[in-house]
Amino acid sequence: MNFTQIGQIVFYAFCLVTLIQLFYYLFFFIRLAVYKPKKKAVSQTHPVSVIICARDEAANLAKNLPGALVQQYSTTHEVIVVNDNSFDDTRYLLEEYQKTYRQLQVVELKQEAKLIPGKKFPLSVGIKTAKHEIVLLTDADCVPASEFWIDKMQESFDENTEIVLGYGAYHKKPGLLNKIVRWETFHTALQYFSYALAGKPYMGVGRNLSYKKTIFFRHKGFSAHNNIPSGDDDLFINMAATKKNTRININKDAFTLSEPPKTWGAWIRQKNRHYSTGKFYKPLHKFLLGLYTFSHIMFYPLLAASLIFYNWQLALIVFGIRFLIQGIILYPCMKKLQELAMYPWFIFIDIWMFFYYLIFAVAVFKRPRKGWK
Image 1 (cartoon, rainbow, N blue to C red):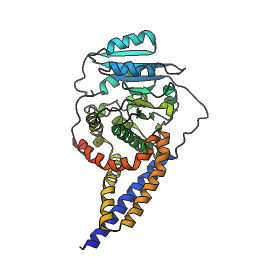
Image 2: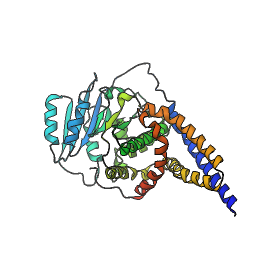
Image 3: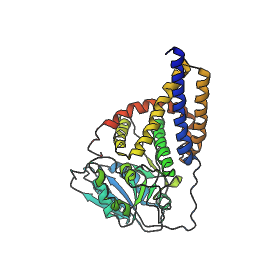
Image 4: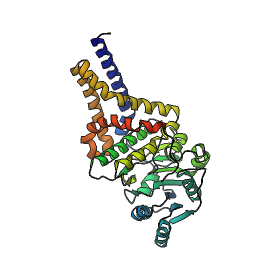
């Protein structure tokens, strides 16, 4: 095999990888770009139970809990905080809030569920305690983006809808780490929203997720994966979500906002924990996500090899086609998720994703850590 033949093979491989990438953009991601929520003929409000699990989260609760307690929602609702064996001032803080907010319910856990690591036991207790059929989940370090969060999230439910996937964004801060954290969050949402719109829902995020108690009990809660510390959000949705029972909600008033990790180490630990659950997804989801990741990893190395060893003009044309389609589809998606500030950076962060996948590839093979805090 001569040098010219090697260059041709490299270029053909680059073209194949580009076609795979374009398939995902033109079959999956474009669905979010053109998505418009259907207007309901009849509007109905439902009683809602908001559930927040907290362990040593006094500082976060002091800052964020009022956002859930002052929601403008005329129908019956409650806010349940499950205090999971906290050693800080969480209990006393919640007692003070209860004096002002009658809708606040507190569940005190004083014993560890040793055979059920992570957040699944306190969350299960919170769901069982909830008075209402619709439960709306968020975290102690999250705050609703508006006072209409409950109202807008519950709007997506009807008699056929059992799961509503929301967007859990991060606060905009200066610095490169913040841009990367927000891009990764957007990129993950781009995938799970688009897959859901294509009838293949595979995950949601616990920062902003809602479902009916009926589906939780029908699937016996988290019993199928109680031994795994994480996955109270994505693994449950992966198991329970279907084409017919799942909807997305991208109303900006239905977002939640979280404080982003402040250090690279904290962010890497967080992502390692999240990615350790991916191996437990359904085979089809693992294949689709894996193929997309593989094509993304291979795109830039094969581009560089094609520029050097084949024809730089043809290689740039193929790159330009992908870049153009990518830019056209990402713009409306970022606009809908209020992330347009990152649009000028997308090509640079897209290149960074090559290194991102390499960094976190190890997490797929790691054993999940036992705690959720």
